Image (cartoon, rainbow, N blue to C red; front, side):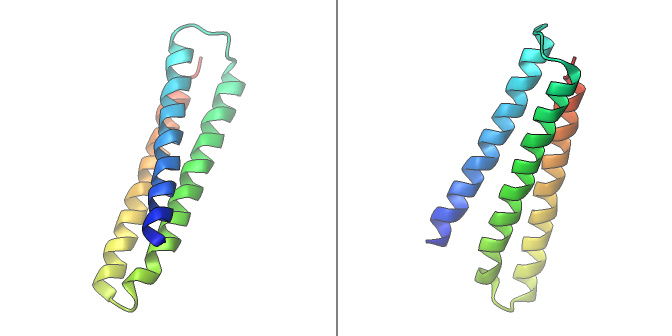
Length: 97
């Protein structure tokens, strides 16, 4: 059950990243997307990415039980994934017209 939830959450993150790239491509292609609209889409996608990662973290955490090494590794992965969301946000905003 938890594995299916994690897979679904990861799928949401991947889709969010694809949307970011799509917005960047449209903006780079000279579309009529305004900077404000583009930035709003970037922020919305960023929020979805963070929410998906927070859900993945919460769903995975019980699997560690009280194992400190597991929890430490899980926290490190969580932070790395949040950093990736932030990097994607910055990349998306940089591609806005």
